[in-house]
Length: 302
Image 1 (cartoon, one colour):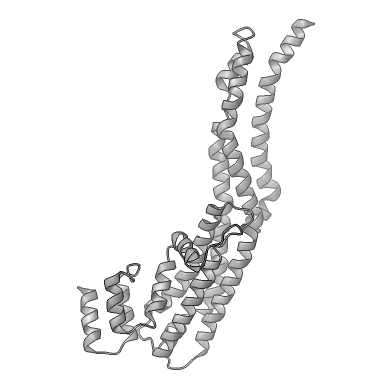
Image 2: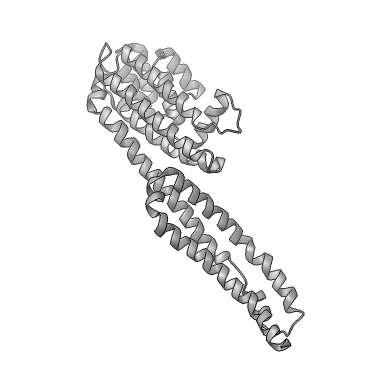
């Protein structure tokens, strides 16, 4: 009958609205149960889930408003007490935005933390306390070779992640993720050098070479397929997203400088990313006692 048909039509939009919300809830529940292991262990899976959740959060922001207007138009043509009118007043998906954003952050955040642990496992065994002591050596030693091997292993690992993420994540999210991991590598290499009490001339040249390779290799990781940045442009992108980028670059440059160059660099702000106490320690470790050295240390400690 006409009455039954009208009732069915009146019930259909609320049913579809409720079903659509339940589908989104099911997605969040099932995806973590069915693919939880893969999301936690495979970088590409984590990136894909992150993208899906960001997209759904974006859609949920506007979906309710889009259909609320349509329900309002339908409600105006029927009895004001109809379910259609009630639906036009409550139709929203905005409350689903935070859960999807949280799931997006959780999937990539957990993966980044796991990758940090793996990078530490690659680097730390090769950068023991003996490496710090080996910086006082006047000839190449096995600890230097181990440090170079550790850097190559870390960069290889990051390149593998880059291949998994670059084509999936948005440029900004990719750069943030890569910046987090590059910083982890830089901190592990900076720490033993900054703690050294003696750095010989050959060791200074080695550290300069090592850190220059770290800077160049890591900067390339920030190149996206649709970008044509030159080396300087990539350095700027890397410095924006990797907090330690300018510091490791400056320390590497320091290693080939004379005291006069360092004094000039201070005046030009080249070492603004290094604390005065840290720079003072490097000067004391890398240079023999002299009047220029004392003068520079006094100015740094002032």
